[in-house]
Image 1 (spheres, helix red, strand yellow):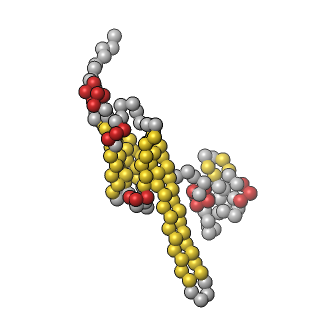
Image 2 (cartoon, rainbow, N blue to C red; image 1 turned 90 degrees about the vertical axis):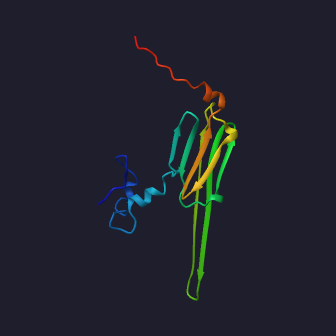
Image 3 (cartoon, rainbow, N blue to C red; image 1 turned 90 degrees about the horizontal axis):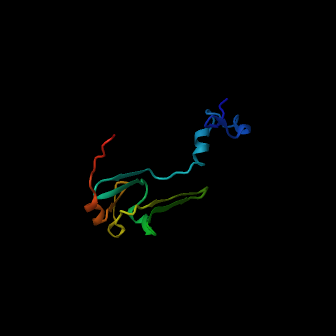
Length: 146
């Protein structure tokens, strides 16, 4: 008998006999529906800019929206797909829906007027330049340890 577990505790113990791994549905598939799925993000910084990369497979460029409000950069996407087939004996309709929304608070050094976004092969790349005064001020200083 396989118990449905997450972090070492039994979830749904009354259903554990029903959802054994040799049955038609596994505990992993059951729990996967309850997990919050956000696209993975990589954020990096150079002397001149910030870069944000989001993995967004399955979305088209026109389904992705990037907005900025009160120094909060929000990236969201939504797609819907429907397919219907009919014949004399049955009707089958399949549909899928996918959506996400992620927000990032931009630092004060960010130049929000010059944000650029590019989407290619399921990867959204955003470049957020730093303000000129921040770039010019950036100096490296070594502090002596006493």
